[in-house]
Length: 344
Image 1 (spheres, rainbow, N blue to C red):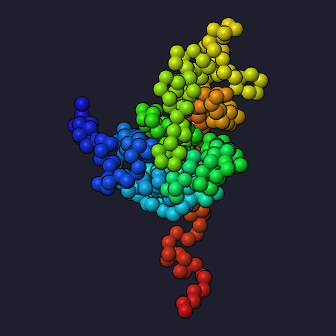
Image 2: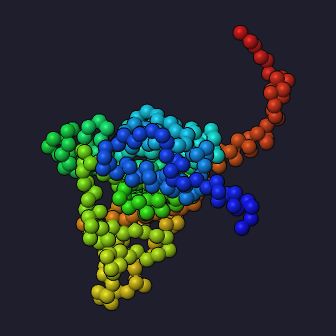
Image 3: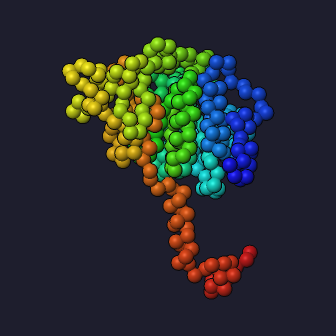
């Protein structure tokens, strides 16, 4: 082991180094606690230093996140986290910019900013906490609440169809979408690290529990003894298998996905679809992102990760190209370029 390697290992940070000295004020049992720990662990495993991280949030329970991180942070205004995070990244491309947002903050008042940050492929790590409710403002239905959901603002059940974050991300020409769930810490850390390594806008939907206003909303996917049958963890290059005994899989039946069992009708693992997260064609990724229980297992892991030029890189290239062609290289050139200056 070289002296340089020893010094690097000695200075390596742990997840506790990313914890601030602020008291965490989320409700006991809230899924936000698990997500916070997962983010801190992921950053430590990525080898980040606190000085190279900026955590930007909007408004909502999840948006208190920057207070609990020992890094740069900005608690902005409702729905504007994507806009501010974009500005931060463009102003300082070297920063690792993490945007923390909720289903209400990102997809209602912030929907326009969200889809354009994704469309532009800004190099941001967007973590979208989805508890299908407005928690901070005391229990109104949100853009992801299920149709028929009874809340303070829909006492007879909402008549609206919900957004699907994956469908919205891919529809906005997004190049990275992943999903995890608050209780699955190991998977969450794995997904967050993949998102961080991706160059461009990465959106990670975290299915999160609001213990006060929408408790157990994702319980069907986390129920002990059944979660393996109701979710599928997708990994690039591996067959789409799931189930407690890994004996179920996904195939295409025409243009539709179909759940099959190994052994039935002579089906073997060779017949099962192999996940290609890097396929530029979003068709299958969209089908996977839209799967819902009980008809299908809910897809977890990295669903789409397609390399593509980032807005940040192309902006820098454009500026450098314009500067190279310009006759004006300095303020002195500007002053003596023949323009008439009038000072009032």
